[in-house]
Length: 358
Picture 1 (tube, rainbow, N blue to C red):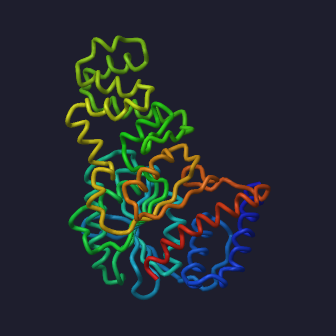
Picture 2: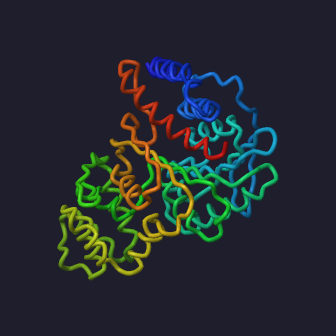
Picture 3: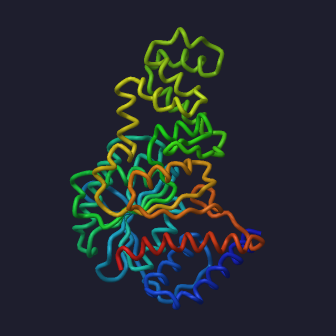
């Protein structure tokens, strides 16, 4: 059945390819279509795609896989999300291969994010990799940073690092968050409040449980039992120390209007942690073009987050899709019209990515 779905979707892309020559610029849009199809794992022929080699390398101490096509090529730093296999995640490999066959030198770094750990060393690794990739002998021109899910958010934070100034041409993200307090708001209340507008979020039921597990790591080990019991409703919040009580109140809150106020009551180190990994905290220092794609039904990262990004970065270009489950396409030949619309929007995003370095 999956084979039939893939074949049906492939035919939709092939149909779109038949008219690509009618809309300029032809080369970028045609190449973007091939990159999109291959990245989604669709059986799309690419007779003019570039051959490439892949090797394990270290760029300024950052290890990862480097995909190198023939000749000097525009560089792409591909930052995967919190997938356990990191650079070896099949989706990251497909996308890296698709970009390399589109004539890009692609570096996919090893990050601790793949173990679902938020460490500042990863932001540093991304910034160092940008500079080193720009100077690499196989690359030509500034780097494009392409980030998937949380990797996109980390990439946006790294884009504000002074070290990368002049080394980036664009940041492209798919399924990224903009503000971690905004993610908490949606996960705990089911609503993102963006410029006074309520954006409902059909969250994955595991989202709040994940937040609670992360929150428990913020408190001293000796206090975790009491906080765990209070969050479960089997203990008294009144007995918690002030800093632990602030975490409890934030996570049990069901009023989206109160989320940011409650977050401001967290301990300074906890507020600092949320800011450190939130692109919203560095918005004024992101001085390169940003393009983003996000699914309206994303169960992992609230759709409201891309609206926050668009509001904070008015020049950013945003593509909206709905048949993706987070970053995975979910469609079938029976939904051909909807799938064609989705693929047209995804193709638009892919064209922004490819076109930035043509």
